[in-house]
Length: 210
Image 1 (cartoon, rainbow, N blue to C red):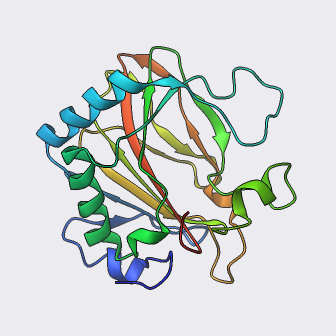
Image 2: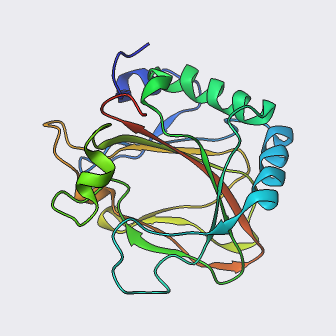
């Protein structure tokens, strides 16, 4: 297990079925059927029962920038424990470096416009969010249901859209090899055109999360 908030492509690609997106701009991978339908449905139920309007760290004045709903999943729930275990086994990252898993729900027409998961150095909330645990290192996201239309995750820099599939994992390194943040990780949670989208997101930090 890694002693920091780092995973690696070398480790992740050893998992059967893991696919790396062919680009030199960022480290981006996907794995279909990472978790089964039953676990997906249990997590969807938790999100539906605890969701609230989503927010962003640095307010940019655009009230329509992130229109989804968010849920802080209960860490002691058996479904959340199972999800955490699966992510730890895959990533090899010490769980102490992980933020609590979040769930997100996107209803018809909702989206999260193009953004990065790392905190912008020099941004208004950078010191508040990064002074103790450091920057976000890796993002692991899992789609929990099939979406009838829309709801893809678009990486504009590489002209790549990942479409939702129940149980599919998507993960990426938020930084370059020198440790600096990677702007090519900017991604857009695109509008749901038909149906509803559910996902969970797990972020890891450079230092232990408090």
